[in-house]
Structure formats: C-alpha cells, structure tokens
Length: 135
Image 1 (cartoon, rainbow, N blue to C red):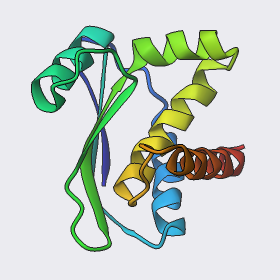
Image 2 (image 1 turned 90 degrees about the vertical axis):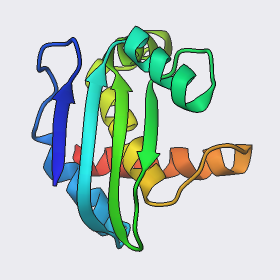
Image 3 (image 1 turned 180 degrees about the vertical axis):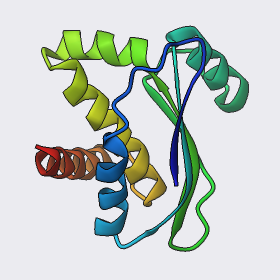
C-alpha cells in the first residue's frame, strides 16, 4: 500500500497519483509492499541527508530501500519546496516535476540507479516513459 505523510506541511499532494504509482510497480514486474512518501520542506530533508547519508546539500528526494525480492517497500522523502524551485529553474509545471520525482523514487526501489551518466540516462528515459503514461 502507498501512504502519503506530511512533515510540517499541509496535505497538498494529489492522492490520485497512488494508482499511477502502483501501475509503475506492476509495469516493472514488481509487487507492491509498503511505501511511505513523506513530504517535507528543504530543511527537514537536509537533516535527513546529513544524518543518514552524510551529505550536506539540498536534494528533492531521498529513498530508503526496504525491498525484499520482487516486493517493493520503502520510505521516500520528498522536498516539495525543492520540487517547486526545480520546476521553476527547469521551466516545468510543478505537478509534472512532482510526478517525475514520485516516479523516480519508485524506480529506485525497482532497482534503477543514477550514479553514472549511463544509469542517469536510463532513469530519465524510464521517468519520461511513465510520465507519458500518466497523461
């Protein structure tokens, strides 16, 4: 099951995205376990980044992987503030950038990485593919 939680923010994310995210999981031939999206601001996510990953910079998403076999489970922390800033910088609609980041977390749990340029290209291609399926 997919759950949405909010840290220091009002509830503002469209819960209709849950079905689309479940469809991504099925398309990747995985099973849905427990996925918690925790929506927060930049400062909250920066603290997570510093404490758990020893990174001292802002990011839009951090994914903690609890996958067992083909069952997808995890915690996905998302900075709505960073998504808004990134959407503006990239001249994208906020909701499109939000969907990209939501899908990005699922793709990480599905086994995709983005550390190398090649991995990042595959990840972007998958994101684009699933964004097109939403529309």
